[in-house]
Length: 195
Image (cartoon, rainbow, N blue to C red; front, side, top):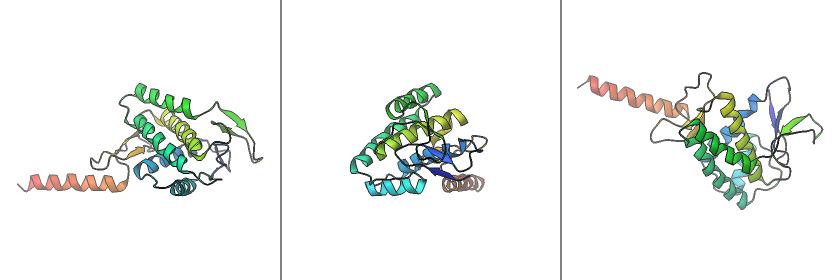
């Protein structure tokens, strides 16, 4: 299924094949958030480029204020990642949802299919991303499990990631970190065996 985002003025994603569930696009906002946190954009233009690369249509030039607002929002989003219990995580995410999203509504504004919006129309890029990431994170956690958002287990990394695995046991943000830690464990085991 190909996911095609609509314009940032409507804040939704929909598929070309409506027989697939919305679960497919749920990963887009969480992956975008973790990407932006792990390697923050340095300019508004870079923010726009990375959003477009992730599938978010950017129909107006991002402003410096968008970048500042997104970076501040991502700091608050990290509090959701770092919450140590499901109730604490839910409370922090509920605050973001209250500040960033609107009531769900159906729309066919572009004439290419009905879909759900979770935000008001005519928002800035920062407003779009706040709503998209907040709602996407809520759907990810309620659909996959409240513990499916965490930090990389590799001590020197610590990047956040969404666990999209079937079993929910992902410990690392990337194969690179998993391999690095496996090599470290192997070498430590070898060093003990050769003493």
